[in-house]
Image (cartoon, rainbow, N blue to C red; front, side, top):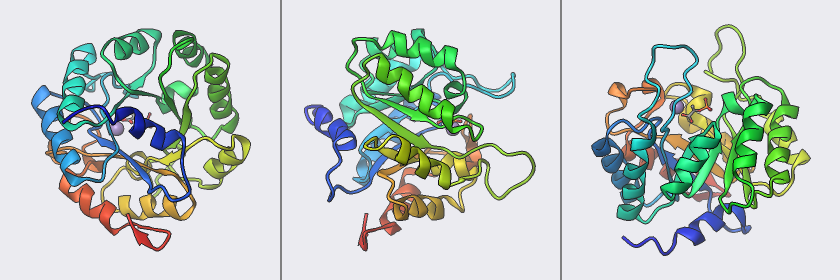
Length: 268
Ligand code: PEP
Ligand code: MN
């Protein structure tokens, strides 16, 4: 599969046209092994629904003792997945070193995770590492419902000259039991869009739901609210995933989920 169309696919996210179908980024929560990354990505590409592949390489775990990611050795696996599928790749970065490593291995899109967006020192470090670099960056909302930190993270990247910036809504942590792993608080991403018009806005139903059975409803709600698309976690063996097992779905289940979404009265 050739990679010639990768620049066009990236610009489909950042230069949205009124008739563009919702954008979909999909891939495992974490890269685990080369075989898992290649098989997941090839099966995702075969669905014909995915415009970019994702995988976590460095995993920001809330508590110590969990799987913290395979690290830099996973980057060539993603590069290979991109060569095999012709799809661009997206990876979470939390430090300047992560940025340098991703750029060295030709990762196409970077994203700032929820735990990092809430830390201005880390965001500034990433922004400074991106000065003069032409790579798109997606910024997830911070864990807690603090819109100014989300705006501030985008402003730091804008000031560093990052040419293409997008937003990912992954829900907000709230204390106690709720139906969601992270409450959607839809008014906040909508307010964010008002504050920063023109930036593509994706929804991350996987981290909002934390479970499989509500993913479709949240992905649909995002489209109903005019989001530009979704980012969804997908794994070849979800129950045995090394992180976020409960919320991942196989590429084939993801295909059916996307197929059933309605966008402007048309199927996606
Ligand atoms: C992820 O995308 O796997 C992730 C760690 O997400 P978040 O930063 O939204 O918790
Ligand atoms: Mn995850």
